[in-house]
Image (cartoon, rainbow over all chains, first blue to last red; front, side):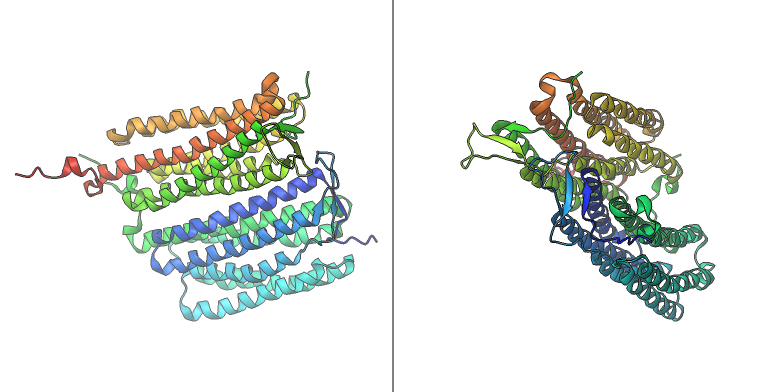
Length: 278
Length: 278
């Protein structure tokens, strides 16, 4: 069996370098400006839903900070010895390792917060929300913590072992989200029930991308080595954009609809609501 | 046929360097401060039009971020070997490629948002706006995505092929804007109808600059090589300033007029409105 380490790829091509470089910059822009947009849109929802927006914005900003770090780290980790870079250039690993831990630090903070914003926008009774949140936050932190030793492992066996351990809290999390949160779904206004359902599907679908990207080095072939490194960075980055920025916008949409249901003065859809002139 | 690559021009003159350098700085200033102005002007329009202003500001900020990156990248990509720079200096490409992808990442985010702000300021009924927006956003993202492979192509044939493919969603976009959006134009207040018409002309006129700048390397002659590189950067930068900053100000103007029509207390035209002293 090949020793397929995910990190410290000694050499990547110019095309691979540019792909990763541009995806990191895209992540900074998409996450950062979604965060700002969410903060600026607070007044468009009722006060009771504003915390969900603020937490969503914090998630986006924490991720933006880490993508800044990852971007700078990547630029320092890989340089071309060519005096004039071209599409034929090769980028080599320098004395500065590419630090995959930034992602885990980010997830350790943002994944529990994503669950906090989800529960916050549902506006459940405190007696229901509190124990639910305790379970979700604990399981998600454990999931990230157990994944990291596998991410930096140099052997497939170690990667698989920690990956499997990390899957246990992940499955528990899905159980809580689907069984326990479902019970509260009936209490949501009819107008948002399908969007809330979508939110849960998004969580599962997007969070499913991470373990797949994690396993790339184990798959071997073009999923290992330099191309696997690029595929994993692309998978993680795009999953982060969707699971944080797009997810935050869905949270905002739910908050908007619920605000309108709770208080019709929050309706902005005037063309529908305006009386027809006689 | 000449191999007219748009990127990786090995050498540019001092005058060319300064032109591009100053245009990038102009773009940062024009876009950044228009964004701030739009945010600060929110209270001058009715709440229902504020989202159009916030989205316009986000477009300006996303572009500002990318012009910062482009500016820093340009400074690192071209340096003069002269110890004292003069008008006779030559600037040579370094080991850091000039990354044209920043623009595409920017457009990928901002072009759909420009359509969002356009539809937002029209304040159409939700049942009309939603499917319209879905079409426009999808077509615009496809247009940008198909353009990129051609932009970084080293042969004219590849450039033309992707350019042609990218034109298909562009034409569809024009069709939707002109045929479907026109239907809603009659429902706009008489006071803004001509400005809304102008908005659409602006979209088409300005967005038409991009494919022309894109084709510069194919035209050959002084449109290829170093002077073509400068012309393309100038074309893209000026088009960005008009299509994002100036466009955002037109959006603001429409929102102002509509606010005044909907609620006369939003009128600021004191000389007209003030009672004539007896």
